[in-house]
Each structure stands twice: as structure tokens, then as C-alpha cells.
Image (cartoon, rainbow, N blue to C red; front, side):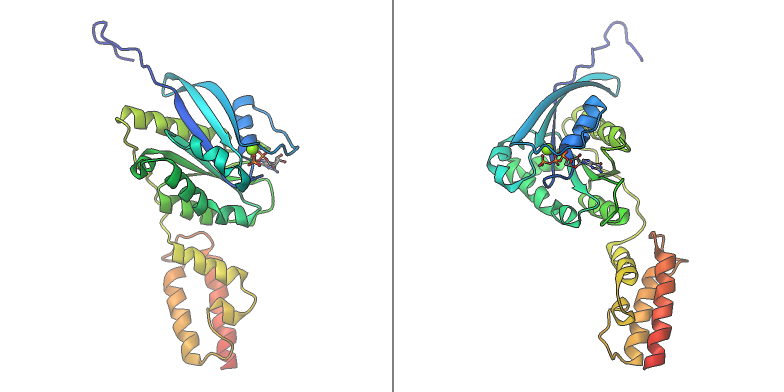
Length: 269
Ligand code: GTP
Ligand code: MG
């Protein structure tokens, strides 16, 4: 630490305000409990309206007082939680990787935050961490989908399990460091840099190839498509997924499925 002739100022940081968002039962309260109290509660106790807690932590060598507003995810509590968005500096937006609908709701949560936070441009300076929780369970949402959604919004992304504790400290470390950096930067958020190296189109193509029930579906064709259609669809997907070019996770397996589907369909034409 450097001190210039007794002019070193104590690094005073005002209180920090953090909120949690996401559908009911995704694990918001458990993630906060895991972080603050280092424990996990298996029994579901729905948050009624809002839970408030304070914790003191050291972030970037500063003693920081963190005010956490843990929101209830159930729609009936909208009227209660809507007034707590204002002045938020950091947000944890949670979904449950074993519940696809909770991932599909993320956009609605962002919209709710945008409309309630007051000045729209304030949101640009809120540090947001997307939290893909319950990774100890069987997944309905792949990591790549979550990462893609988060990076598309300029948000950080973390995989967590409140049950095992995995990822929880890292999530809060990034969130709080981001908030403090924003304060240090005069209230302006430092953009999240993500270098995924793959696109939404690539991920969607990989998923369709992996999850489709028929070869026609894999290539995005209707039953009875012509030889020409098959080759056209094949070429389009091959450009997206060729393992020499694509770094999207699952490209290699998807490319094999693509080649096999094309071979089978051409035999039928
Ligand atoms: P609301 O307060 O209704 O909005 O729900 P919430 O998002 O706060 O969910 P909560 O933290 O209360 O957790 C809901 C249920 O999920 C509880 O039964 C938890 O024990 C369970 N749960 C939370 N996190 C995890 C996790 O990482 N893994 C597993 N397996 N279960 C979890
Ligand atoms: Mg809760």
C-alpha cells in the first residue's frame, strides 16, 4: 500500500445494495444463506415479500457493508418487491438448471428490473451476475445456453450449487468487486468482457442435432425433402459446425450427427 506524506485517505465505501431475483424456488435465499452463513437448508421456506440482511465483507482491501434484499420470486409478491429495485448496485439473477422454465423467465426479470429501477440508464451501471444454480441436479439447461444468454446481456455468469457451496463465493466476489469498481469509477460500470468464441446460431444448431427425434428434424427439413434440400441444409450447418472452425462445445459430436443424418437421408431420396 502506498502512502504519500500522510495524505493517504481511509478507503471509505458507502453501503452497497444488492438484490436477488428469479423465479420462486430457484434457490435465491439458499445462495445468500450459503454465502453469509456457510450453511444449506434443504427444506423450502418461501420468502414472503422480501428478506433483508446485512453482512460485512472485505472487498478490494475495503471493509464493506453489504445490504442484501432477497426478493420473493412468486408473482403475487410483485407489489411488495417492486419498490426495492431503486438504487440497486448489484443484482444476482438466479435460475435453476434443472427447471427450464426458470431459465426462460430470465428476460421477464430483466424487464421487471428495468421498469422498476427508475431511470433506465441506471441499469447500465448495475453489476449483474447470472447464477445457474442447482448444478448438483440433473440438468435441463446446458452451461453454454446460460453463458450465451448472460454474455448477450453484458452480465457475468456463474454456475453454483447452494447445496454443495460450489461457485457461491466466486459469484459474490465478482459481484462485489464489480460494484466497488463501479463506485471507484464514478458510478460507471466497467463492461464485462467475455470471449465465448461461439454464437447463438451455433448453440441452437448443436442442440437441434443432439435433441431431435428424426434426421429430417436434425437438418431442419420436412419429411420427404429432396436431395437438393438435404445437401443445402447440410452445407449450411457444416459451415456453422465444422470442428476445424467451431469452438462451440459439442461441435464435434454434432458434426458427426449431421454427417450421419445427411447420409441416411440421401439414401432415401
Ligand atoms: P422464493 O423465496 O420462493 O422466491 O424461493 P427461493 O428462490 O428463495 O428458493 P430457496 O432458496 O428457498 O430454495 C428452494 C428450494 O430449493 C429449497 O428446498 C432448497 O433446499 C432447494 N435448493 C436451493 N439451492 C439448491 C441447490 O443448489 N441444489 C439443490 N439440490 N437444491 C437447492
Ligand atoms: Mg427465497
